[in-house]
Image (cartoon, rainbow, N blue to C red; front, side, top):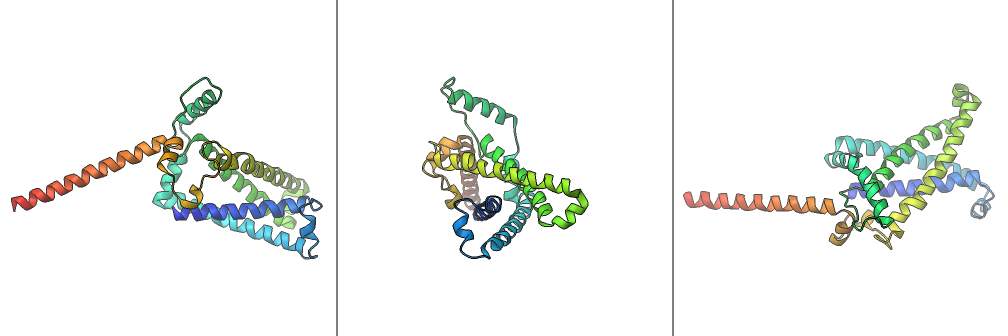
Amino acid sequence: SLNERIQHGALLVGFAILVLTGFALKFPDAWWVVPIRDISPVMFELRGILHRIAGVAMVLASLYHVYYVFFVPRGKQLLRDMLPESRDISGVIGVLKYNLGFSSMKPRFGRFSYVEKAEYWALIWGTFVMAATGFILWFDNTFIGLLTKLGWDVARTIHYYEAWLATLAIIVWHLYFVMFSPDTYPLNVAFWKGTLTEEEMREEHPLELEEIRRREAIEQVTEEQIQENEITNEVSK
């Protein structure tokens, strides 16, 4: 839906800003940071402001998403479809067998495969960890008093390595499945259009396509029955 695409777009922009401004602090002499830093003495201070603004925006977007999946009907269905199932394990095994040549049959998935579910829950966990540790780093004077310097250093270390994990997951994992995978190359544009072609559905989400067709068939039969009943009532009058 448009709502979900806007959420995804906000996440994409916020994440990109956080990555760039965060690593610019950690690696101030990197080749891509120096030209920006040398533009003006205030650029590095602006980096910190942008990082905090993007962090707050991502937290607010995350809180909205929590509301969306718990109180909006479509969001509730999204959450139900994202819950792990026993068939996800068989899906992992089936993909391994197919990719290694032990099976000629490609596993069939519904609305979300185990890959998409793993990405979603990794995002939830990563956002929580980064928000919590980022908050500690932001208000350092307060939290050094509460957690001691050692506790603050632990939070900083977790924040740094979780940032690397999240960045590499997006570059190596997510971008592969939406851009470089043979099934989606050169780009899966569902994030922009909100739709997939029937061919894409048949390739990536065949079980969901079957469910959509089943519902359409039921709706058509129901509509025909209603029309027949109306005709019968007219005749009886």
